[in-house]
Amino acid sequence: MIEVRPFATLGAADHGWLDARHHFSFASYLDRDRMGWGSIRVWNDDTIAPKSGFPPHPHNDMEIVTFVRTGAITHRDSLGNEGRTAAGDVQVMSAGTGITHSEYNLEDEPTTLFQIWIIPDRRGEKPGWGQREFPKAGREGGFEILASGDPEGDSALPIRTDAKVAAATLSAGQSATWTSNGQRHQYLVAPTGRVRVNGKEANARDGIAIAGEESITVEALEDSEVVLVDAR
Image 1: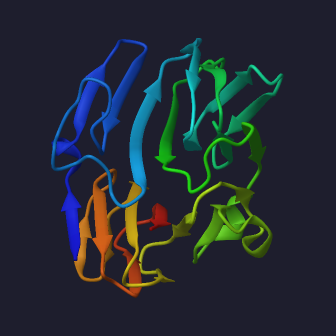
Image 2 (image 1 turned 90 degrees about the vertical axis):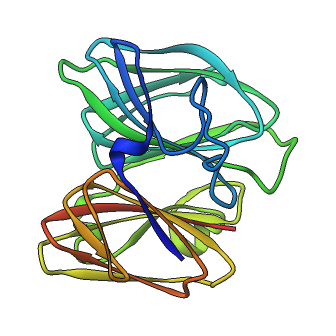
């Protein structure tokens, strides 16, 4: 099953400093048919104005992955962690028993990012945070795993859930294949470029919900970047 969810149908919230699009129900946006996809609970497509951001706020028992598309985001949290994550790189936060953090765009340009929340398999553990640079060359022409429940096996950032977050950069005419298990769920978004996924076409920033597929082939109809989550 492959369902394309056009960008125009996503939930929307424009706060001035934040222009957010919600692939699943979030905050004041409620769609009973889009409460999540498997263990994927949130996928927000955010544009954050320069010199603005999210003031300190708490989370608990959630795996939060931030994929920065353009610009950069600066993180600070109650554990004393601080870091700047730039375009193409990733940060992860395991909220665990509770953590308070802030995220600001301290740059002179807008920052765009995907923030993805995945329900953890393990609860009640100490919170944690990490970031890593992923040179774009590592995912040219194929998928690179960025965050994983098997971080050592996948050479990726750790998350406390049976899931993988991956990205690929494809030139027009290239394709990349992701193999999985027909019992799992995948959600895919191309932040740039048109793609064809197992025969279904999607535009940039459309959501693609996938289930029951053991092999997923993404063909780039234009130069494209692709972000995919594979979860229970």
